[in-house]
Length: 331
Image (cartoon, rainbow, N blue to C red; front, top):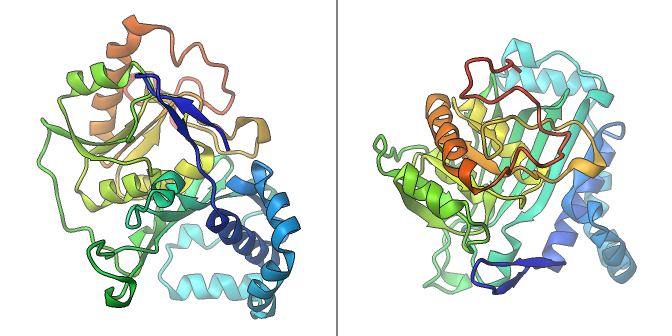
């Protein structure tokens, strides 16, 4: 479905698989059935891919989603009661008007990795924003615990789901948050597999980066940071979309960190079809004070290289919110 060139001139295609389309079709149908008035933005449907899937596999999709349609529906009151029983904070139990809510869905994050045979780094992402700010995130990692040296029949139990948001913390079945990296330096950073911009190398040098991983799967980066096996991730170019970052931002904020653009500005997640791209890059971090230091260093390092990202017109960037600036506007 497109692609781009690396710094050494190689073209890297952005793959799309049947798994992407079928997972999203099932998720969108389930969400529409449960919350018909809420705006849901899915990667494949936003890019027109589900039109192909419907035309080619309507009968199969009908069979797969029959169980979704037949599942019992809870009333709003029932959903709130279930949330209270699960221990959600009082502040999160008030009803929210549907027009204020946007749900971002990435049915298979890390598609290129998946197509190349990678399994454990693959995730399914769902992020919920209210009034433009991420309030809840779900990251499902279906192949967590996968052993590439074993056949399918020899694998043990696989998968985990991490969920939560500000005020609720980070929760989920199979959550492992035991590893803790030492304070930098070195700065343990999750990077993309392919180098596509001139800013990454000088920033890594200035930040004294030691790669925690080089893999093109943003959801996996969020998990590595949440687990404490990485300090941050760096994507200093226009590559990611709101469905890549919404869930991760909600979870990292819940854990005391956050997500910003390349230079420390916050994104607005209100529904804007023309602004689903994070045109000004993406930096995620587990600790707010660390995030200030990282984004300040990046801003200072890339200033001699050009105007990016301040020359980019992106009305999803919240002006005046540089987290490392003394005059930052609170959001």
